[in-house]
Structures are given as C-alpha cells and as structure tokens.
Image (cartoon, rainbow, N blue to C red; front, side, top):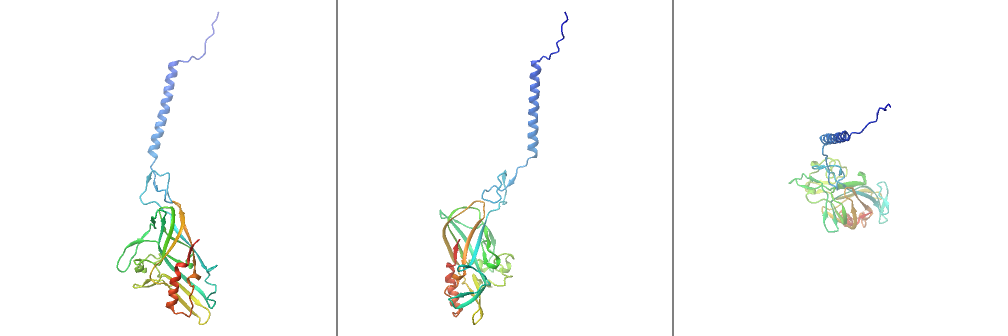
Length: 290
C-alpha cells in the first residue's frame, strides 16, 4: 500500500510568536521614527494669545510681544440741519428772515470715555507725544476733527476691553496741553496738523486752536461771510445710555450733529460776540445718539 505524501503546512507555535514580536517591533519603530521626525520639524508658533485682540490666534503656542492688534473705536457722524441732511449747496434760513449757505462746519472733539456698570472708566489705548512750546508730554491720542468734507466716519483710537457700559462721554474742544501744541510739529495726517487747512482751526501759540467753527455765506442783503467760532473752553457731552461692545470687534458710535440747533436764536444783525456766545450755549444740545 502506497502512502500519499502529506503536503499540508503545519503551523509552528514558536515561529508564530516570533513573527508577532517582529511585527510589533516594526510598528513601534515606525511610530518612534514618525514622532521623532515630526518633533524635529515642528516649531512652536508665537502669535497673539489675547482673546480681546482682532488677531487672536487660537493655534498659537506662545504669546508674542507687542504683536496684538486691538479693535478700533469709530465715530460715525450724521450731519443734519433740522429734519434734512446738511448740504453745503442748500439755502437755509434763520428766524424766517436771514438766508444763508453753510460753506464750512468743523469742530474738535476729544477725551472719549465710556463708563462700565461698575463705574470704571475706559479710554483709548493710543498715545502720542505732543510737541508744544514749553513741554513734550505723552497724552491719549483720541483727537478727532469733525468735518463733513472729510467724510462721515472717523477713527477715534484702539481699545482693549469690551463689555456692557452705561455712559459715553467726550468733549468738544481740546485739553490745555493739546491746545498748546505746535501744529507744524504734528504728523501731516494728524487732526492737530492744520498747515494744509484752508479753513484754519489754529490761531497762534498763545490762543491755540479754534474748537468749533462754522462759516456762513449770507445771501440776503447785505451779502457777507459770517464766521462763528467757539471759545477756548472744552464743552462736555454726556450720553446716559446702555450699550455693549464685543471683545475683539470694532465698535461704532453713531452720532447725529444738528447744525440748525447750533444756530438757534442767532440773528445776523447781532454783534459777532453775541452770535458766538449763543453758538457756544447751543453746542451741548446739537448731539444725539442714533
């Protein structure tokens, strides 16, 4: 009787065990090599880690030094004359008698503050060195020159903290330090540089700047230009109204400025001093939040 040759493969338990160990070792070495390669190629990222900043980077590993960009407080102005949009080409009347056109209307506002519900005062972060005639101090750089010919939106400055606020306030005019600034020493685009200004807002080194100025072209007889300008004392403007500012986002304050209210009670047959005094008295009433 002839026996058939057995060609079946028989598993050797010891061989199987060694093969598993070998395979596992290969996997471990591969993982180790991969991690080593990755760690050698990876560089920790340095960037802004302040969540209040506009360039906050959640993927950064390390906080940078002075690289964070903070939101901007913007002022949006709606220029009106009573119930209509202010137009320098329109003809207006006062007291039903005096007719005129407004050819220029400009004012400085500064010292912006917003007050939290806990009565904490927040201000703009930006500072600037003012080159004056007797000193060179660093002050908060929140000066804005409101001028319809320059547009409707103005940047006040940067801020770092949002929240819920109950009051916003600013002043028409400049503080005593800013008012002694030499405009020729200021950057060309800064509001306190008036060298290229055809409607001058600067008087001289003793008097400083004009805080509020309006130029009227009288059209009824006698035809003449009337220039009214505010006194050298800042006028506080306060709005008691709740509002919120989100961390990391620009904030826009929308304000209506009514030039009809600025000229309320003024008659062109009055003296210059009387008209300007009335204009100053009217100034706190011309602003309203929108």
